[in-house]
Image (cartoon, rainbow, N blue to C red; front, side):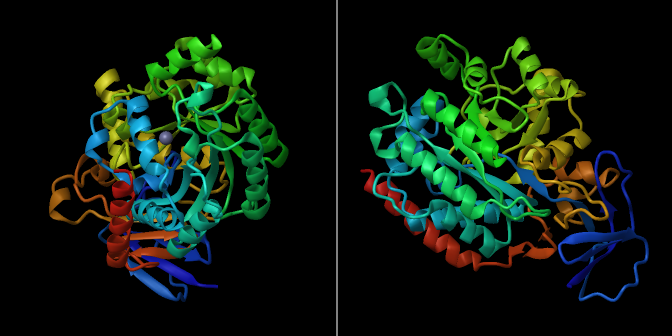
Length: 453
Ligand SMILES: [Zn+2]
C-alpha cells in the first residue's frame, strides 16, 4: 500500500468543528488519511514538504454541465437571462458528439481539480438525436484519466416546444428511452461501497423541460435503487410564472406533488422560495446546490443561504455549467458565495468557516458520500493544498484559511490529492497533457459554433 507523508504543514483546516493545526504532518496510506500528528517518522513512499501550504479538505462540486465548457462566453448569450439564454444555446448544443463530451469533461474536471475540487457531479441533460454513444461511460473515462471522484447525473428532457416546454425536439428523448437508460447506468456504474469513486444520480432537467410522468417515474426508480435525485428548481421568476401558468402551482409544490421532494433530493439554485417553502424544504431534509456566480451572471437573484443554514437546510456549492459562469474555478466560487450573501444580508451574514463547510462536508452529504469532506483519521484522502507564500497573499496570513478567499487571484492548488493519489502536481494535472487538451478542445468548440451558422 502506497504511503504519502504531507510534512510540516503550514496550516491545516480540518473542519469547522476542529481547531486548525500548524506544523503538523498528515500520513496518507492507500486511499485514506491514516494519521494526523506532529513529527511522523513512518517510512513512506513519498514526502511532500508542506511548510508553505494551506491544507484543506478537497472541495465538492454539486452542480455543473461539463459540456458547456465548449460554449463559454458566446456573444449571443452573454447578456441574456435564463430562458432566452437556453433557447439560443440549445441550437448549438445539439451538435454535441462523443469527442465534444469527452474533451469538455476533461476541461471541466481539470479546472475543478486545479482549483481544489476532488469530488464532482455533472448534470448532462442534452442527448442530441442520432447520438448513440454511452455518454456517461465517456464521462467516467475522463474522470478516471484525471483521477476525480465522480457522481454524474443521468439528466433528461422530455417536454419539447410542441408540448409546451422550452427545448426543441432535436434535444429531447421519450420517457421510455430515458428511464431505460437511467436503469442501465445505475446497474453499470453505481457503486455504493466506502470511498466509492462512482455514484449515479437521476436528474430530469427542470419543470419547464420534462413531463410530470418523467419526474414521478424517475423518483420511483431512484428510490428503488437508493440513488440521489436532482433537478433545477426556483432558479428564476420566469420559471415560477411558467409553473403557475401551466400547472397552477409554484415549482416546489409541483415537486411535492410529483414525489420529487425528500432528503434524497438536491435542487440546483433554489433562489425564489418563500418563507413557507423554506419550512417545507427544512422538514423534508432536501438539499440545495447553490451556484452564486451563475446566479449573478444570469441576473437570476440571490439564494437565501444565510436563512437556510440556521433552519438546517443543507446547502452545497456548485460552479454550474460553464456557459453561465464561465469557469470551473471552485475556490473562486467559495469567494463568490461569501460575497454574494453579504450583498443582501450584510457583512456578518456568512463567515469563512461556513462557506468552507458549504464547499466540503455539506456537498459530500448532499451527494451521499460518507467520510468525505473533512481532514480526519480514517476519512478519505481527498485533500487540496494551496501555496500562500506568494506575493498576492502577503500580509493576509494572520488567518491563512480566510486568506484563500479574501486574497489571491490565482486560485490554483500546488497539489490536489484524490483518493490518496496526487492528481495535481505543482499546479499541473498529472493525468493528461494540458497543452494538447487546449488545442483539441478549442478545435471542437470552434466546429460546434460554426455548425450552427
Ligand atoms: Zn444548471
